[in-house]
Length: 194
Image (cartoon, rainbow, N blue to C red; front, side, top):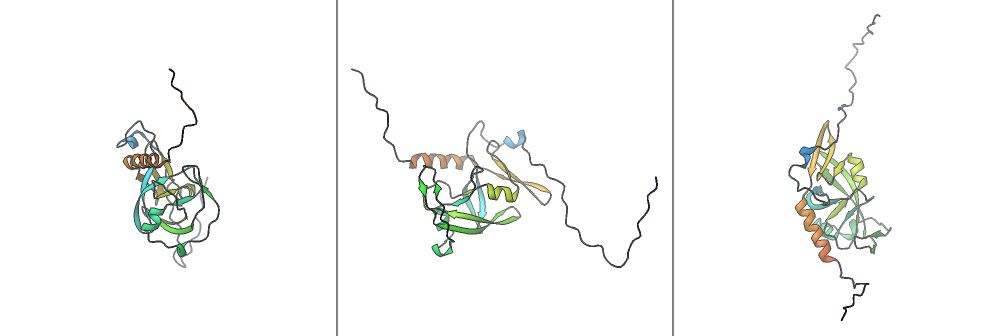
């Protein structure tokens, strides 16, 4: 078997090829549990850079199809009603009530070296979280998240980067959500026997 060498053309530099990175494997191991309280059933709550600010209490909602922003973040970013684009589809809040959004806004979200535009639906309802990032953000960034390991991992420039969740914040948010719930009258009546 012989191999023939192709003639070379010395007429100029070789065209640039896009950088190719080896396929990153996004997985979790026992080492990823280090620093977490086990066992637990905590939500995955992280800090993200949104609109140029480090924003705490961002819940990762991998079951949700929309990124949501709540009043504390809206006010903290000094956004105004005129900054919003119309958005008229109703949403359901944590307490099961229908909420009409105030509008939608596109903001830059930076995750490590990755910067992307994210459309947030702004709602004026109570939440212990400042925002929820969901499937659109997860899929665009290539994120794999684990509530068990309290981590988010994503590929970036041939490396696997991670964001650590904060269990203490997740638990604070849970307590705040439970404390905020209006008390419902019991539908079951218990009679005392005499």
